[in-house]
Length: 229
Image (cartoon, rainbow, N blue to C red; front, side):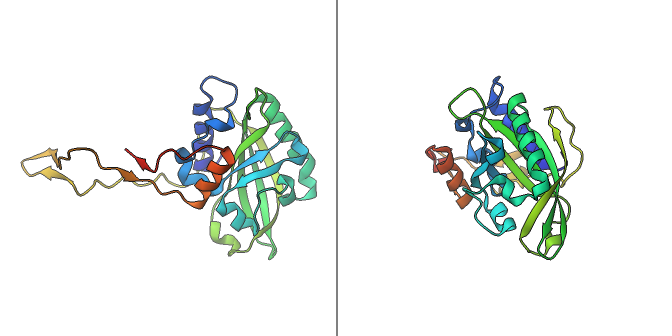
């Protein structure tokens, strides 16, 4: 895996398994992967050759130029890739292991884009996995396609993922958070900070974007918190 978010998604998938072979779809908390939601999707793959999108983030729909929900997963790949992809999905479900796929995307203007897709098996109210939690991203310069929709992808390589696979390369980690203005260093003791006292902790407003609302609806869960305390 090359993209940092691919590693983050597999790490999250591994954590929510809690000792099981695969997690259930109901274990997914959209808030835990909020920053990746626009690239995230869920596949229905009871029949791998007919896998379809149950949900797809806004970034993905924008990149392909149409709403992916309800469409075939294989429809955005060239015909040469269909059989290998169906076999990969079947193998991933059978072995209960995520799979990473590298591909070359092409736009109508013939621009070529390197892409990475990760699929992690999910169960859905039963023991055997039949769905995937997935993420798809462009590697390198995301502006290379000049905003043109991706016409199709061609499978270039694949690999079943081991949980301890080292991170290879990708975007740098985010900058450390800036301290809030209410925390100030004491002039005579730089290691001490003056913190404003409150009778009770202030709530943090939690805004849900379209991707989070769609994922919550697809997972059939209720957004219990509008404020995180």
